[in-house]
Amino acid sequence: MSLLPPILWSLGILCGTFAAGLRLARRLDNYGLVDVLWSYGFMPVVLLAAFLEPGWPARRAALAAMVALWSLRLGTHVLLRVVRSHPREDARYAQLRRDWAGSFAIKMTGFFQLQALSVVILSLPFFLACHNPAPGFRAPELAGALLWLAGVAGEALADAQLAAFKRDPTARGRVCQAGLWRFSRHPNYFFEWTTWVGYFVFACGSPWGWLGAISPACILYLLLRVTGIPLTEEQSVRSKGEAYRQYQRTTPAFLPWFPRSGK
Image 1 (cartoon, rainbow, N blue to C red):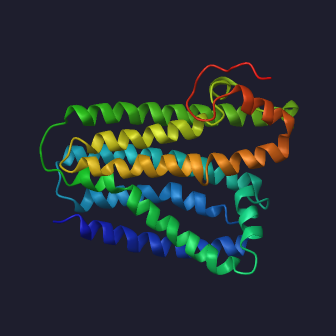
Image 2 (cartoon, rainbow, N blue to C red):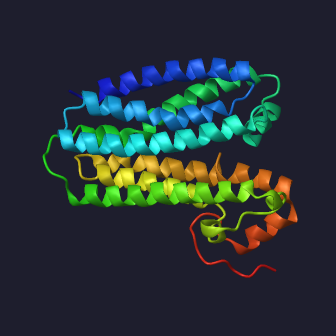
């Protein structure tokens, strides 16, 4: 079996799912739902790949478990965030309403479908690894699994530390600098990227696995230049002002490192 059928099946299922999600988002008037769909979307894709691809069963099962656990944790975290803040919408989508005024409906339709396509493209390492029939785990697969574990654990810890900070009644207007947030302004994004590097390294144990580099490369670009750090920091500066500007002066944006003195 070639890689194409599982990819096309995945794309069809996700396009339908995101179309239904768009209808629900319109009814709720909350387009943050797309983040929930994106996060959960990788779980059915990897399960489909593990079921349809002819690779070594243990490899398919291990990768399916890794991706499903990561997708389930991230999706549930995002879902709870959207539910708790509803009907207030994520600031990124409130800004898109303003930027796309006049053609918001059609552009948001395309945006949802683009997210469905991105899930399939980013899943390339999963398809490549699940297609590999060679028995036995190889060194890149073991190294990739360790990177995945570090990424998932680090992101979960960063999310928990931020959630605990927000629950503090005295935190309003302040900047979270607890735990990992003391060493990076976006440790959750850094460990999310680490997880994707893990998937890529895991795929390098299979023929053509190097093509999976597209996934961490795309994730890094999105986090650093598009929907990740730029939009998040714009909102943080608007809401916290000088306190966040001081945080920017003292704390690395992405790669965790020791804080520097800010003047």
